[in-house]
Length: 315
Ligand SMILES: [Zn+2]
Image 1: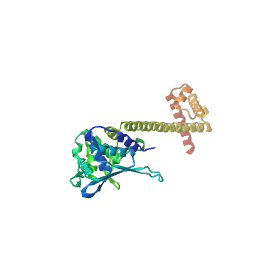
Image 2: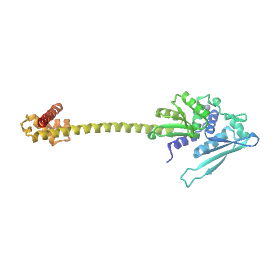
Image 3: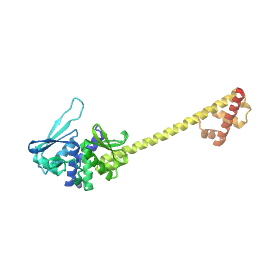
Image 4: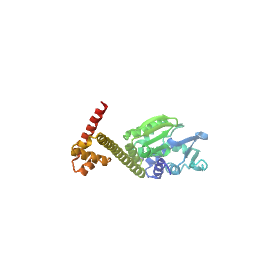
């Protein structure tokens, strides 16, 4: 079964739209997240990208073709990992060329002859493009847990500048995003499930959002049921404990020959308790046709008498 993160990626990778601005923003984030640049002759630049997700690989091919208007082609090779039970990996490669450099310049990843680690401000002016940028970042290096596994959403990137850009976009959208450093790089995370759902909505992962929300509601319902069951179990244990104390009291009074001399009402209650050690006060009250508080009072009285009797003996 594919992980939930893979499901979300598959859904997002299939989304296609006509806005050229968003295509550029999504591709820029995807490449910033997962691509490495290769140097060629005459200061030309190439791109290489490895992913285990076939839908992501197709998306990159599509976006590169659209944004470069067919000027940059990419080769794909598949590496199969049959033995280790690992998924295949897809290696995308555009050989170094002036066209690739032109594409990367247009996307803001290059400025002149050097890499631009800057903020991608030009690509992020419009809300539609900011959403597309997050989508690209998620496809390139995002991860998400279902609510059952503890709601968690994250991007991992090796670039601090890119991490800071993602955090500032998320904060602008009102998401409580945090950033931390791990061995694998900078981790930008969102933990709260409501925010994760907002984020999925912004990225337009509609089907995944629905699944997430369903699982979240189910989890909450289960927790609620567990709380009620625990509470009822505790109450039941309390009731049973109280009942057995009453039974013990009546037995003691009988052993001591005190019981038979007690008023009828007390004897009636005591015998009813001994015969029905597991009944609730309500059930005893129905059995004897006496009010619940009346039964309660009589049983307390019996316990009191047993206690006094014990006291006499110990003294
Ligand atoms: Zn746009």
